[in-house]
Length: 312
Image 1 (cartoon, rainbow, N blue to C red):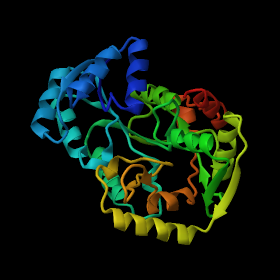
Image 2: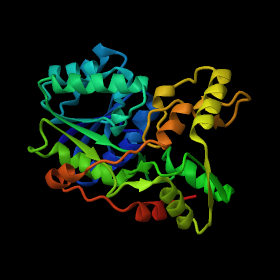
Image 3: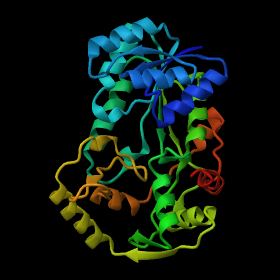
């Protein structure tokens, strides 16, 4: 298969591209920069240069790829869905798999939620043979933006503050399990016109995630509940002092799309109010449809975090 991939040089994209190349697919990656093109080349893929902000350039790049299917890993949170759908249609691409996020189910009034839901509607109305995959928080490997932060904290401190009571449910999915199911979806006829939640095998309380992560490091940790309301208000105050953060829509921690506010003194970033609220919000999803249609069988969080903890 000739597979056109957007977002192929990113955290998830690198795993998808490497897996696709290993199984014999011809992968063409959309590259916004020379660095992205070089990353794709290292993975055994070719590159077509284009920026999704440039609709005409994107159309030309899609047409030149000569692909059989599109796998869109680029974030749907930047308003590019129309550009991508139009370019795919103009290039004669019918089969297309899009990665969204389960964060669109949040009860919080997150701006990114509205953008992503609008993107999903654009995809459904596109006339393409589409599939939408909604992963939960993605982890795995030394370059993730989620569990790496938690592991780093646990290596430094034996005490972990938890917003609320630490009972908020989380269902992380390992990046390699997600990469596998995305490639199965591309080849699945039954997946056409369907949306799937993709998560770990079971939802875990935040406290259990912290305990499992500490155990993977061979450390003991004391979890200290902190009041949710005052903690959120403190984060809001720090965020106002810091001002708007750049690239906020790209931040993804604990399966949200939060804004990581820079510290007023610079350097390390302060966790945002939205992130804290999301930590306390239940995020539990059924994976039965993905298991039945796409043979999705994710590894346990305990197994995944033990493997990740071996990376330094």
